[in-house]
Image (cartoon, rainbow, N blue to C red; front, side):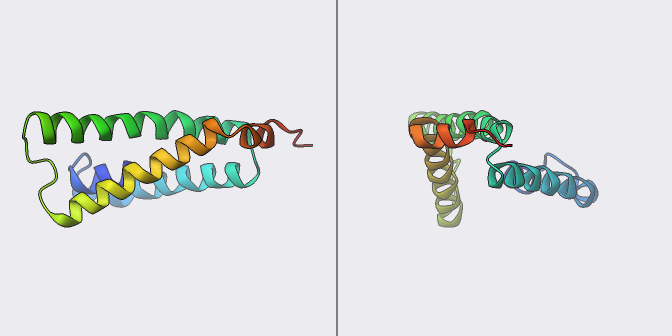
Length: 111
């Protein structure tokens, strides 16, 4: 979601993107490495980011697009991108929170 927002909604000026995107890449790489190593902090960070991201997208689509009729998803590519983002965040969030085996794997002794 971070990269989507930065590239689609002009949150960062165009000259600054070349400086901000490597920071975002390091953030994603650190989380990926933590998940690969089954670190609890990485799981908690992914839950803390994917849960609110899912809620924000669902609110935007349900309230703005359908209830208020504002054209949020203007074209087919945008609709598909948002659908994939929402579905991916939902699957990640549910897998990390619902399955007890996943929680046990991250709780296991890392030594």
